[in-house]
Length: 204
Image (cartoon, rainbow, N blue to C red; front, side, top):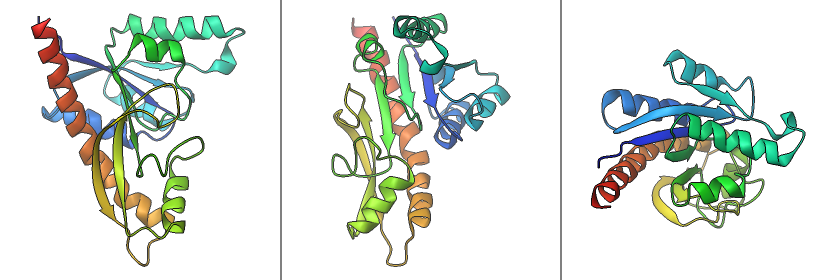
């Protein structure tokens, strides 16, 4: 039985990678349906991007729950309610609860703006990654798409794409160059994973 990818995208900010995924779906380059955009930040602009497209949104923050059990129940219940069968992290700045990782084993991916494992781990996100790459005097950097496990940036690598580091780069200029590559690579990888998901379901 064919089972189309039903994608939940997790964000914490502006959602430019979310927009790239939305554009890929709308253009037919990504055979998936975005069933939910979830954020831990109520005013994340990515939520507005989703609403403009009629995509359901949810705001779930641990701080809003008086117990961890209720937080996990809400988290998993929301994903189930919307029928999500795959999760893509797109600038989501919280550790994924282990219960969610277990429920979606092998079906959670993240995009990281630098080489892993050298420029990964707790606190290594966004501009901090590019600052570290420049401090290390690297001649190249790369975008990394990887599986999500219980440790920060520890999952196996799915795909990488290299970007040059120029002599006059600032963290901001490097970030802009890398972000363009992220917007190309992430939808491409998700399309490959969607095809694999369909094939594995058909063979089951």
